[in-house]
Length: 172
Image 1 (cartoon, one colour):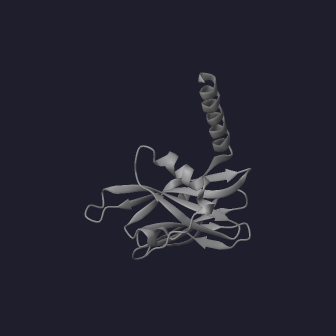
Image 2: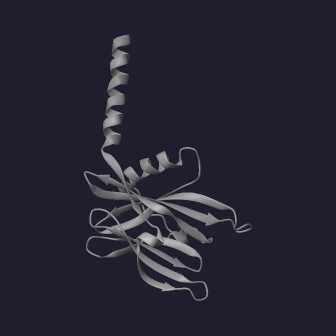
Image 3: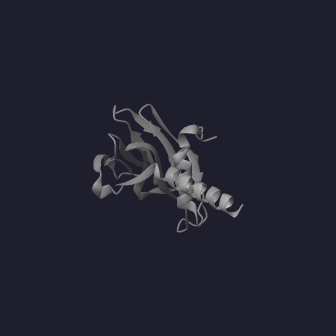
């Protein structure tokens, strides 16, 4: 009986390790200095649009307006898919310095980006979310917003690995 339990547990652990090893993370920069500036206007609230290197023929755009940032995904076909972070949370915001691409057999399937939102009462205090988006050659959208916590990164990766099966979030 003990052998049966041992082999069952062993098999489950090996299977879980194999399943999680299927998808890998690659990282690209979202820093202004490492992206190509497409548009920049420092007037009033300011605006910026930069194109950043990605993977698998994909690129990312960092867009900023009125002290809020978001990401757009540029597919290999050059079609642009807006992720509209600022519609999901309207506070003053910035994206993190890098994007995590979840890939399966070298093909990007999801994206994880840190999204820092200022507190409405005290703009010196931020809440740092992880935005999870599914991506494909025909579309991209946010599927999950991971709240801060000890296992935030692990949870975001698990959600990213299954994002293709979940619906897009709406701003409503």
